[in-house]
Image 1 (tube, rainbow, N blue to C red):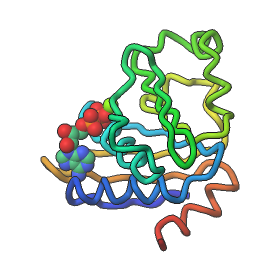
Image 2 (cartoon, rainbow, N blue to C red; image 1 turned 90 degrees about the vertical axis):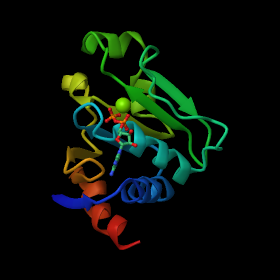
Image 3 (cartoon, rainbow, N blue to C red; image 1 turned 180 degrees about the vertical axis):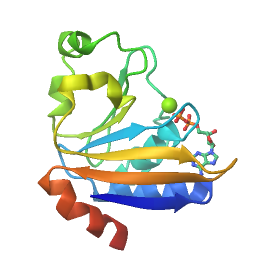
Length: 155
Ligand SMILES: Nc1ncnc2c1ncn2[C@@H]1O[C@H](COP(=O)(O)OP(=O)(O)O)[C@@H](O)[C@H]1O
Ligand SMILES: [Mg+2]
């Protein structure tokens, strides 16, 4: 099941992210795909605000460490896998503890996970639709998200 949301401005992207953060449950996984500058990190920051990550915890892309953890109502695990060498590195770094942890896991460049991609997740594709406009396509993977994706948009 997929839902397309036009994001006409940065503010609309931020509002979507905050809603995702407010409604997140322990163990949720959100994967974010889209080219450089599509808004994956911007959306992650807003998810963090919705989760209650304090403003002084400045959310940046974890380019070199691949993973940053922030405190909130639930812990936020933010992965940017752009520089991941291969699936075996996921296992070496112990990332499966985060993929199946108690926090909310938000993953940029999830394609790098290959066969280790969690089966239950909300996947979001971000597309350019203008200088400050984007389009988000949300796809529910797994029964939980299939039931929850509609509710998400009603709130
Ligand atoms: N509607 C929008 N949604 C998200 N980002 C936007 C939007 N309009 C403009 N931008 C800008 O696009 C850039 C997105 O960068 P970033 O979030 O780092 O992308 P990515 O992580 O996908 O490479 C930011 O500078 C952001 O301010
Ligand atoms: Mg990014």
